[in-house]
Amino acid sequence: MRITLLPGDGIGPEIVEAAVEVLDAAAQKYNMNLEYDRQLIGGAAIDATGHPFPEATVKSAQAADAVLLGAVGGPKWDNVEPTLRPEKALLGIRKALGLYCNLRPIKVSRFVSHLSPLKDERVANADLLIVRELTGGIYFGTHNEAALDENGVETASDIEIYSRPEVERIAKFAFEAAKKRKGKVTSVDKANVLASSRMWRRITAELHDKDYAEVELNNLYVDNCAMQLVLNPGQFDVILTNNIFGDILSDEASVIAGSIGLLPSASLGDGTGMYEPIHGSAPDIAGMGIANPLGTILSAAMMLRYSLNADAAAAAIEEAVERVLAKGYRTPDLAGAGLTKVSTSEMGRLVAEELA
Ligand code: IPM
Ligand code: MG
Image 1 (cartoon, rainbow, N blue to C red):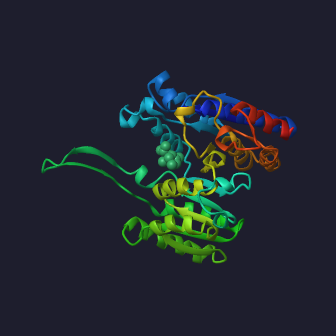
Image 2: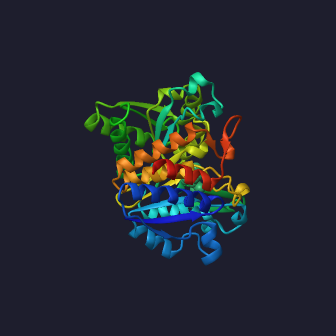
Image 3: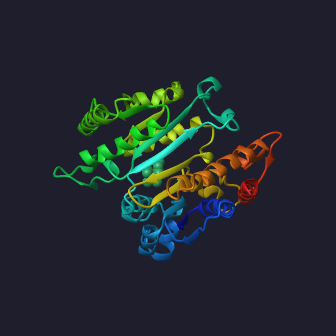
């Protein structure tokens, strides 16, 4: 199986190498042949080629069975031209691979729940999946950069646009996911203001009534959802939402779990899938060997499950992570009294050994 590795920027290279160590252990144990192709993306690609998402990276990713990504971006590239920003590479690869569905599971590990800013009783039963539309909406609508309008006033705009097929395919994904979970979908929009949201709500309801009547469907306005997530996160099962609302709500939801460092994600379409931790490139700690690789390691587990058809290996990685945490090993972000502090690479090795 061919995996394109995109370490990217900041802590990306360190956390991806830790995940590779774990993948190698899984490959050995479960008799899989994993081939890696390391390619450039983001700021690292800008520095080497002048472009954040070079052709060689596009080709490698398109030919791969799956892509594992670290993170992109950093202050070094804050002032490059907007169309060449490192983040453009993320949007570019999502588009190139048709990754319209972003899955961000938020599950509270008992080893980090005390780090949640929410009270214990609120966090206790939180277990939700954000299904975010990833290749449409305002992030891909026309961006009109700031310019003087006919009255000489500086003006800029971005267009939120969705089509019926885009809404149907992501809603279908959410309903299917809910069937395998607690059977509840909360569709999040701003239908009291936005035309695109009104269409989203109508199409989602139609699909529900036609094919998924057994799933419970609720609608929430995004502002209310932001509040409900901290008031009572346990009420949610699957949250279905558009690109921008999903971007914002998934960052909010990630802190409920206590640490963003542990959270994986999958971006899926009809072909190659891409897997990455939810957190960013953390340039302030890059190269120091203190980054938490568990979000990337758990993303690798999702990759085995969703793209490489290796459920047992995926579950084994998830269990190995739990056991390493149970033994008290922590990277500095999660360290505390009575716990053993380890580096990024040590954490990768511990999970790999536990797996073996
Ligand atoms: C994410 C990130 C990206 C997004 C940025 C870096 C373009 O925030 O994956 O959530 O907004 O999609
Ligand atoms: Mg985001």
